[in-house]
Amino acid sequence: MTELAPSPTQQTTPTRRTRWPLYVAPLVVLLLAAWGISTRVQARRELRQDTQRRESIAVVTAVPMQSAASQEIVLPGNIRAFMDAPIYARTNGYLRRWYADIGTHVRKGQLLADIETPEADQQLAQARADLASSQANANLAKTTAARYQGLLQSDSVSKQDTDNAVAAERAQSATVASAQANVARLAELQGFQKITAPFDGVITARNTDVGQLINSGAGSPQTELFHMADVKTLRVFVNLPQTDCADIKVGTTASVTVPEQPGRSFSGTLVRTADSIDPATRTLLVEVDVDNRDGQLLAGAYAEVHFKVRSPAPTLMVPVTALLYRSEGLRIAVVDPQNKAKLLPITLGRDYGTRVEVLTGLSAGDHFIDNPPDSLVDGQEVHVVRQETPGTVNKAANNKPGENKK
Image 1 (cartoon, helix red, strand yellow):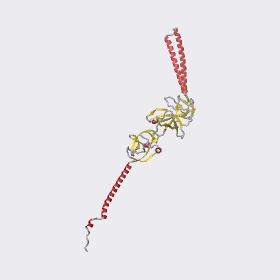
Image 2 (cartoon, one colour):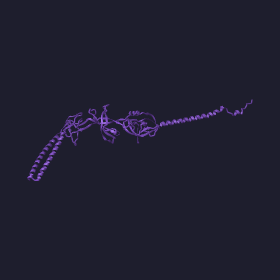
Image 3 (cartoon, one colour):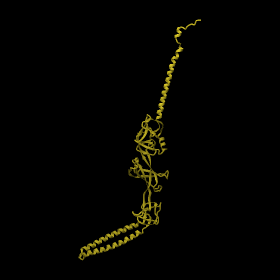
Image 4 (cartoon, one colour):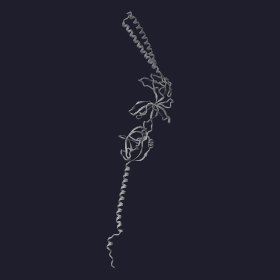
């Protein structure tokens, strides 16, 4: 049997089923290529963002806190007696008796001790004898001069002899005056046998006892017999910082506290200042007087003096942990809208230990970086991980006193 050959139409015309895969395969390839390219682009973008985020510094920011209208300045002070004097002997001898011991309250002129002065007594006796001899010679010279002047009128004596007699009278009168002055000096020295109180006060030290040798004068070692202090009013000396000198004047009231009496304060008044800044410490020495008639405060003690200062205008406060000490000067770091750090030069006012006043260089709306790294540079990119409130950041600063960045 002979096979029939296919017609020419069946050999040259392809079917629809055989054409479709020819269009699908290139489309799938294009889709796969586009998906691969977009995946790589997204991965590169995420890698770039992650790299930038890792290169930027994580920081904590806060806004400055407004200071109160009035501030309290607490400064250390030294309590001193209003009058304080060591008492020495002015004459030589031996202590016969003392009448006041430490802690004794005495009045002005009250007897404190007696000194035996046998040498001074003998010197006074000798001086009085010399005075009597000088007075006798002066009386004889006076009589002789008067007699010569009478005889001169009758030319019984020469003019030269009369002049000699008158000159001798004057010389003897001068000798009498010298002897009288010596007696007065020794009598005054003998009066130093009795040691008396120079003012009302309390005896804070007694460095002598009965029978002790008492020396006086510049050429011999002297011993302080007593030490006295007037403690009815106390002087509290305070070194006021230069930045506060304009706000605290004479007449400003202050309260004084001592560590041994917690919860109690004593009122005082600033009465005088040194009117000169100490160039070594840049402080002004001021004196606050405190009434101590009840004797609750002790001279020589340490105290804290509290001054209330009213600010003419509120200032900005930042924690000391936000400060950067650079070679070009003091700086504070803030974050701008582009999340970049800017180092601003600032001027400080009062220092409250954990917080400081910023007078210039910082605005109330600035977001400063708290506790910035020392490696931070101007224009460096940062990202904020937390923003503190003014009360939180200052409370945190207060919980870490003394942590001032250097």
